[in-house]
Amino acid sequence: MKKNNMILILMFAVSFATAQRPTEKNDYNVKGNEAMQVLDFSLAQAYYQTGVSSSCDLYSIEKLTLIWQVDSSMRTILNPVMEQCFICLDVNASKRDTSSMNMLILYYREGIGTNQNEAMAAYWEQELEVIRNPYQRPATTQSNARPTREKKYFFGGYAASFEAPFGVNIGSVGRTIGWYVRVRSNLSFQDYAAECDGVGKIIGEMNDVLPNPLNIKKSSTFMGTGGIVIKANPMMYFSVGAGYCSREVVYKFREIGKIDAEPKGEFWAKYNGDSSFKGIALDLDGIFKIGNSFYGSIGGSLLNFKYISANAGIGIFF
Image 1 (spheres, one colour):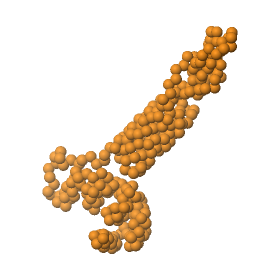
Image 2 (cartoon, helix red, strand yellow):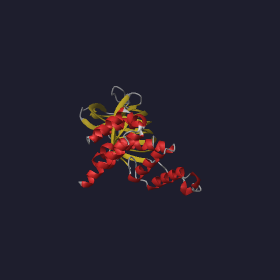
Image 3 (cartoon, helix red, strand yellow):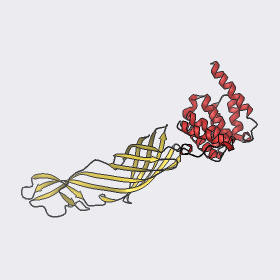
Image 4 (cartoon, one colour):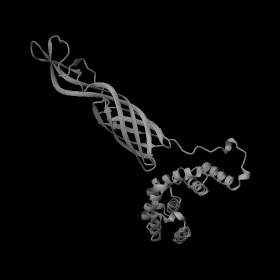
């Protein structure tokens, strides 16, 4: 308990020591500081988040980072805004802002808003030292080159649609854009012995028997699509793509003898009406990140420019 009290005292000392910074004049920082004084971290986080979203306000970022460090119970709620803070710091650090560089080192070292990356922390420490001592810059070597800053994430999971409830979805996404491939089917593959026209009449003559429809049908559906994934924010993505689709409908008939009117057997016939088709499938889906690893998706597919099929899916980022 004493340790926690010391941390809170230190937090308020830092808060008041920086209270006269120009950025505090923004209304959201003033209200955020007032919430901090009464230990309402949730309300303070909401005000400081406004500063991050509207202008990458460094004062707001510092306060959110302080809340992250002091109150570990807030971290799940803070995850999305800390990812925004990280992006702001990365952009400003690239512009040689030393305050942002210092904070970016902390973010990489402790895994705030990004994965822990000691190599990136060391890189920014070196860049900060170059600014402080411009005449002692080391010779450029391969080891001094900046490591890759943004990890490319892969994802995979279960994909389903109203027409084809069994499928898989795989892809990858980086900072802003990626790709996906999706395959779906209803796993129904019914053979047929004849074909019927758009009104259900068997095409061609049948020797010694008459076809009697049983009002039983099956459909075989397949969709294969692919396209791009667009990152709207750290928790939401959109996928847009196109591909091939096919739907084959078959009806069941009973054979009735022409002479004795007795049942002779049963067979399936492919239906050649509008509900059987081969054509283009167009996808539009929203992908929602759940926590750090899981996702859910919902959307729709336009099949052959005539039919709409609802889509859904679940999966994991890795």
